[in-house]
Image 1 (cartoon, rainbow, N blue to C red):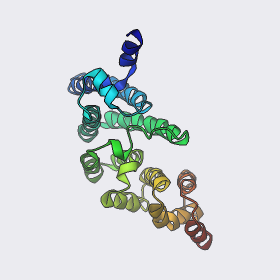
Image 2 (image 1 turned 60 degrees about the horizontal axis):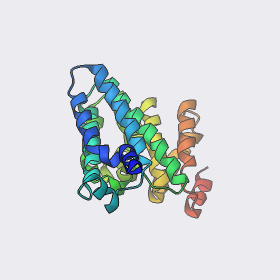
Image 3 (image 1 turned 30 degrees about the horizontal axis):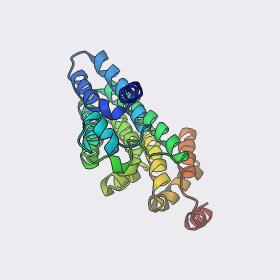
Image 4 (image 1 turned 135 degrees about the vertical axis):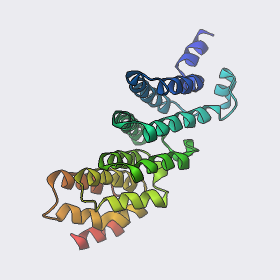
Amino acid sequence: MGFEKAVMVRNSTACAMEWSIELEKALRSKNPGRRIEAIYQIGLRLEQWSGEPEGTMVVYDMFGLVPGEDRLFANTIFLRLADAFHLGNKRTRVTIVRIFLSLLKHCRKKRKNKQMNGVLSKSRVQNHLELLKRIKAVFDSGDVESRALALVLFGCWADFAKDSAQIRYLVLSSLVSSNVLEVRASLFATGCFSELADDFSSVVLEMVVNIVTSSETESVVRLAAVRAFAKMGCTFSNANRAFKVS
């Protein structure tokens, strides 16, 4: 019985509802510091959750949950963060991007070790269209820095964002932006998309090569383009096209 209690304390499934409620209360607080602290805290909790397997009937029975209830709470947490990004100030948006960058890094380690994909995988994010809608609204109406942050977030959410024609278009169009910050953010998203979708890497290959080889490209942009290029799948088609355009 002692072991079961220890498992219950550690398992994120049992804490999901409480985490979601705590986040909502903190985001509604008039204290900016409390809001930021809550975002960082939920980021750590999502990393913890991402390292645990999805709930089974044994786990659901142990915690008295309805099957899929934990996933519902996870999606609610993501929506709260997306709303905070949509309606928040620069500091809030930067903080949200930072926790998802950290979560993306965590999930990539799991993929390399052939473990679970984590909470960012498309199979575990049911309301991805609503999430993308809120971030796209920031991209469409924000300044250059807000657009760059939105692009980075799209990259972090590549597992489901890559399937949206609208988001693909935003990423592609931003590659030819006149603003260095936006181009670098777009290249980050491009690399994330290409890592998971060969068809996308095939579309952007020539654009990325042109950025790398252009004498007018700033060094920081060229470096970002090289990183994006490194994430493209080395299929025969891509290798052959890269040889022809280089």
